[in-house]
Amino acid sequence: MMLKRFVRSEDGATMVEMAIAMTLLLTLTLGFVDFGYAFYQWNAATKAVQIGARMASISDPVASALTTAAPTTTPGAPVVAGAYGPFVCSYTGTTGSCTNSGAFSAAAFSRIFRGDTANTNDDVCPSLGTNQRPGMCHFFPGLQRSNVVVTYTATGLGYQTRLGGPVPTITVSLQNVNFQFFFLGGLLGFGNFNMPSMLSTVTGEDLKSTSP
Image 1 (tube, rainbow, N blue to C red):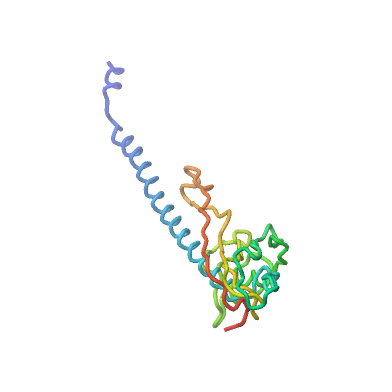
Image 2 (cartoon, rainbow, N blue to C red; image 1 turned 60 degrees about the horizontal axis):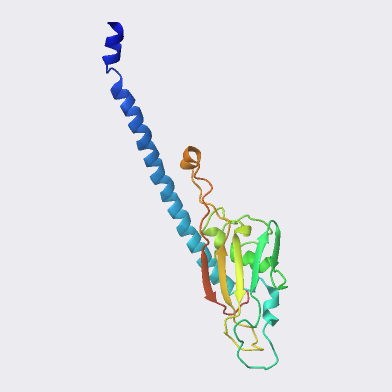
């Protein structure tokens, strides 16, 4: 009789149902929080590459060979597409380099990454001072130099022997950036989602660094 009564008893059923429902509800709530933060990271990355491209267009080129890269056989003639480069500049660990034998300027890269703040050879993002322009790291906290790629391409703009050098098309993009999930990373292993490559493309302007 006691066994039959135990089998038919529904005592505690509500507690079990509540535990199951709360688990699902908590996971869903934390998922909304984490995916909201992922959307913030997406927006921050988009803004960072826009700022990086703008800084690159008005700063000394990271590929220092760019200033003399355009052909000079016919002074004053247009620079044809593909006349030089592309120069793809990035960091691998603590070493910066550019493709196509383009010498790498750490100071120029630092201006893109950090803006007008101190030129240091690390991933630290210094605080901005008065009248200092921000860099990429100020818009995307946690960004590292190895995540940033700066590309200079000849797309048929400018003319040979231009005083300021050729007019490249500049693309700033991100690589190897993962979305950061605080709650779902531990619960469901969402920590390794790679962020799609963000990029912004502009036309080079003065290509020289001057304080505002």
